[in-house]
Image: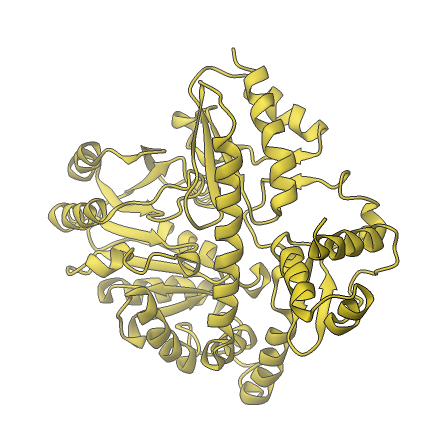
Length: 445
């Protein structure tokens, strides 16, 4: 066994026996190098591997800490393997850095924290976002930006407000983000679906829907789609924009995990829009903390007054404290550092997932695993006993999202299984994925 592997086993064993405690600093790099009679570089290699495996995390100028309370879990073996979650692991949250930004936000905006403010959002934040979004090939004026209390609020308002095209139906990909499905159901909004499989969307069918479907807007997740993991290519994006202009249909582009993009040439649909038909939505919950409840919405001028009218009487204004903290986090450069760290973490996990799935051969099981993002998809090309698969996996301590929630009632399919890697390290992927695939194979009809 190599020396750095000995250190890894040592840290794991000490954690399991309770000698290393949750949220207590682990031995310093120098002390471990002396204990194991090795170089500092060897210890750093071990700690880096433990961090990549989502067992420990590093805090700048402080040291290394355990991610989980192993005294409560007792062992790695009995822990739940959660492939269902669509949010970051709490242990990846930048607590200390963001706490600093919150404190600064209180100092800067103490006079406006407890009063009503512009429903558009904090003026200084919209200016900071206009500059920041240029990194994503999003070029817009601060006046076109609205801060909402999460992307869900934005989707809810857009679904119920009237649009200048006077149309009434909302077109959604099938499957799609279940929060959008639920918003449509609760607001009794007329919705139509169009299939988006592992290979994308049928553009001819989309044009037919745009032309004859009385479509107010088309809700789409162009890259790292939830739940299929699929991304549109440039030709598809350009075609969608041209059709939107031709048939007077708006596009709501939900760029949920834009921050995890690794291909700098993969631009959002918004970048191809020249007619003011694309509404761009970006949340910060997938990269920072869901509890932040801050999202960025870029609206065409024709929609701004109507949207703000609905928003004002929904929550008056989004929380100033969260907005101020995000502004400081962006301006300080801490966001870019955190984004690079998270992007690498999820890319490494997806690469590992792809290697595991590729090594297992099941004729009826297809899959799409992107290079980045949160979500991958397994598709079973055969009738299956869907509920039994979900139930059986739960009995084996493996959680999967029930993707029936991602479909309109008339479009439901039992063949899609979303695999999220946000809360699973490589050890859990290695242990859990063969069980998932074997269980699917077992319940083929």
